[in-house]
Amino acid sequence: MYYNKVELCGINTSKLKVLSSEETTELLKKAAGGDRVARTALIDGNLRLVLSIIQRFGNKVRDADDLFQVGCIGLIKAIDHFDTEIGVKFSTYAVPMIIGEIRRYLRDNNTLRVSRGIRDLAYRALTKREELSATMLREPTVEDIAKALDEPVRAVSEAMEAIMEPISLYDPVYGENGDSLYVMDQIRDEDANDEMWLENIAISEAMKKLSERERSIIMMRFFRGKTQMEIADEIGISQAQVSRIEKGALERIRKEL
Image 1 (tube, rainbow, N blue to C red):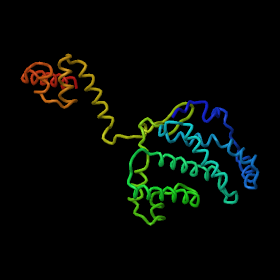
Image 2 (cartoon, rainbow, N blue to C red; image 1 turned 90 degrees about the vertical axis):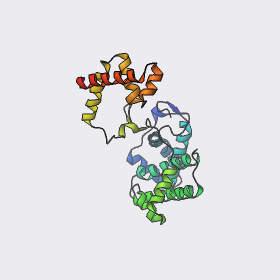
Image 3 (tube, one colour; image 1 turned 30 degrees about the horizontal axis):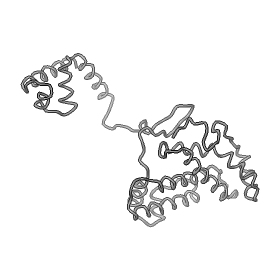
Image 4 (tube, rainbow, N blue to C red; image 1 turned 120 degrees about the vertical axis):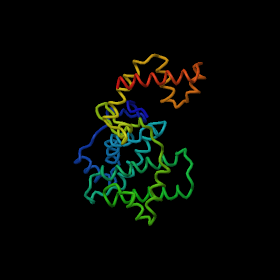
């Protein structure tokens, strides 16, 4: 998906309107009374909300226009079903509706094959999540959904995960002023620490001081997992020579460290 596109479905995304809370409330009341002009104004004034939501899904579909249109369907459903008397912000109600519509679209166009039983449970869980979102006024947890369905938490969790599209490490999860935060930025290596990082730098610097042949043998031996015999066959020398070069190179690295 290309977020720098100016045109989505023929709409210039750089010029999308933004409604104030007061304007939104007034238009919602008019739309609830059957005012078609107010309904259209609400749709136009919340397209930026749809755009911000589809950006959360990264490159999960080939055509950004399709996803934007699906998000607009969710927006229209939210406008048509919103109750101005419930005392919550329209965006609080609309966001789960838009996300639900997009997830339905991604689910139905998922190329991964999932058993019918798991898929049916996932569909019920997604439907229940939307219902709970409207009544709880927050994103329901897997435990909330499982309890409402009277199903095991693990079964519900696995079913919902099974129908989700695989994500890329380069999928953006947040963006502001042209700077994006990607999935890979949120991944933490529990086994790595500052000491290991510095040690790796020291080893890298020590490797640079080896001869080309020494460096090649060390790389094949310890980074590619080859045996001394395999290395000997590959570079055309005896195993004894490989062993001698390896031993000397390791000794030089130890001295550098």
